[in-house]
Amino acid sequence: MFILSLLYLALTIVRPQDYLPALTGIPLLPGVLGLAFLAWAISGKKRLDAPQFLLLPVFLLVGMVSMVANHWAGGAIEFLVRFGPIVIAFFVLAAACTTQRHVTIAMTVFVLCAAVLAAHSIQQANTGVGWTGMTIGEDGRVRYVGIFNDPNDLGLLFVATLPMAIFLSGLGGFLRRVLWLTAAALLLYGIYLTNSRGAMLAVLVVGGIFIWRRRGMFTAGVLGVAGLLVMRLLSSRMQELDPDESSAFGRVDAWYEGIHMFFSNPLLGVGPGNFTDYNQLTAHNSWVLVLAETGFVGYTLWLAFVVYGFWMMVNVMRYQPDAVAAPDQERLLQGERSMAFTLLLSQYGLFAAAFFLSRSYTVVMYLLIAVVVGHYLGMRQRWPELPMLRLSDHWLRWMMVSVGSIMALYVITTLMLIGT
Image (cartoon, rainbow, N blue to C red; front, side, top):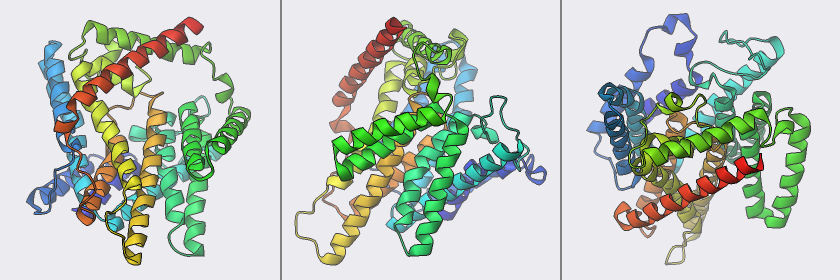
């Protein structure tokens, strides 16, 4: 199951089936995912005691009901076909990543695949076309095939895997350190080539949190301001980072329209994929997109699914065993905390970028959270004192958080529109 999960992860990112003629028409991804799901189904090691295992299938069901409520029964089947494989991939990869070794290997696959795409970006930037045959965009921004055709999706992947590359550089000797730091440099350069403002801001978020934890808030703040100034010098699009700029204004206007779609369909929204039926531009915000398309019910489920991942990693970082741990156990626990901090940074990077992008249903997000959930489940096996997170204990909290976040989105959007 683990090997098949890694193969699915690699095929999802590198996507040879999208540009190699010999693989055209062969259902590689569905086939590998089907085999992995079969291995998971017959496995006797399934653990489903994380709240995400309930939240994600119910979110899928709510999305389907939303389509029916919006008078398109065929849309429910379409959403099932589109999002169902993501749910399966989440279950399988989360079940496979319950040991430190497996989590480390999954991170390795993430980084190596992302580095391949970064190398493709460099070739594309230098020659105008990459080995996939994909040409550079008319605006000079690099792109890849398939789900990474948009430069912003490339930037999101590079940001999410950057903390993993740094983590891997700390495991092993000098040569291994050089290898993974080189990969990290490739990812950073790849982010620069995407010229994605969301990805660049996400790098600042990740770097700021990393420095804050090690050097304090003041140092993180000073370096963050310096980093923003450097990015504005290096990137033409960062120089246009202003609410009055046409692209930014269009995004804020799309947020406003999305919130009003929610007001008109508060319970179940306008249906997954239907945002552009009501507005010319997509939401350009993953939270607004879910809110508009699945309403309060779907948004609350999705928000809980996302935030539980952060909560889990914070729990691991704060965990202290009741009894004094032996030296070997303390080293093991320190490794768990370091891994949790890495996955926490990856989530911060991914969702900081996703705040400016409509990526609520993209597979990379759910594969990353699958590794997070797998790590937490494995931690609870090794350290039973680590608290179990039960949805039944928190459902009222999630409703309140959902209401509060909707109000915050409305206030922020309104203030930005007034400012323009």
